[in-house]
Amino acid sequence: MATGTLRGPDLQRMTHAGRQAGRSGVELAARVGYASRAVVYAVIGVLALMLAAGEGGRATDTHGAVEEVARQPFGSVLLVVLGVGLLAFAVWRFVQAVMDVEGKGRSGKGVVTRVVLGISGVIHAGLALFAFNLLRGRGGGGGDGTKSLTAELLSRPFGQVLVALVGVAVIGFAVHQFKQATTGKMLEKLSLTGLAARQRTWVERISKAGALARSVVFLLVGTFFLQAAVQADPGEAGGLGEALETLASQPFGPWLLGLVALGLVAYAVYQLLEARYRRIATP
Image (cartoon, rainbow, N blue to C red; front, side):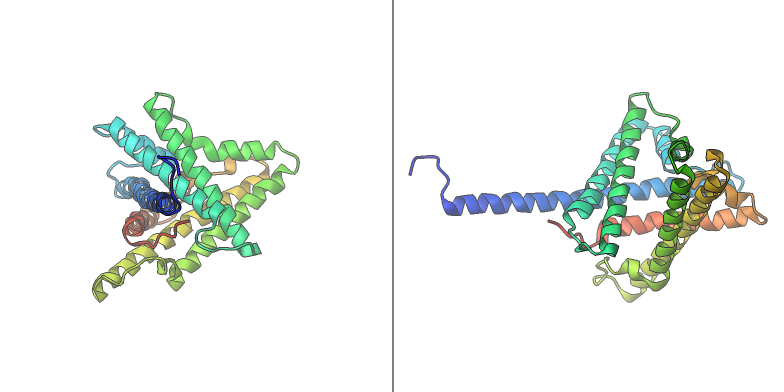
């Protein structure tokens, strides 16, 4: 055999090493991605909590949270880190959707779940791009994405039906997350065996509170889409920021907003817990 030619065992070792590196890369992307999501939701929650307490703050969405990060000291460095983290999470979502590493299968429910994961990947890739565009001085206007999407859909044939379907899908997601929180199923993928019983109890409480708050917000977002469909008016659509503003405008609004804001901070903590304790399925 010529010098330099790989033998069978050598090739197997290299292949195995390559697979291990790929799996490690996927796991790292997932954990960094969850941590980056935690930052985004923490910013949204804290700003909403400040608004509820009359200490400044504002109701904003994920794009607004990224813009807020850019305003901080060393904002450019933070944007790079956050953008890379969000892109890593998008990669993790695409791996979940395309490679089906968690065994969702090809049944109706499995396909829907994988489609949702793919959509999540697209959304987070777009948010990462928004962060990088801010670095280049080309950001801004991200908060109008929901209304722009609604206007685009309404301009299509059967546009009102399309917008209504989006609303139903978002409400369905909100209901699903509510069930996940109330049943505790969302905690099944966390490996908490190393924690004391009291620590596990607090992890469960915080995680459930976060998911419940997020389900409330998405329920409102879905309702906005349905209103936009019925009235054929993209101005009726709204995202996370508009949902928080709606809560603030209700009777006892500051209390409602404050409660949901605390829940969103709790959801940020849950994302950190996923970054640390989630069992990551790799190809």
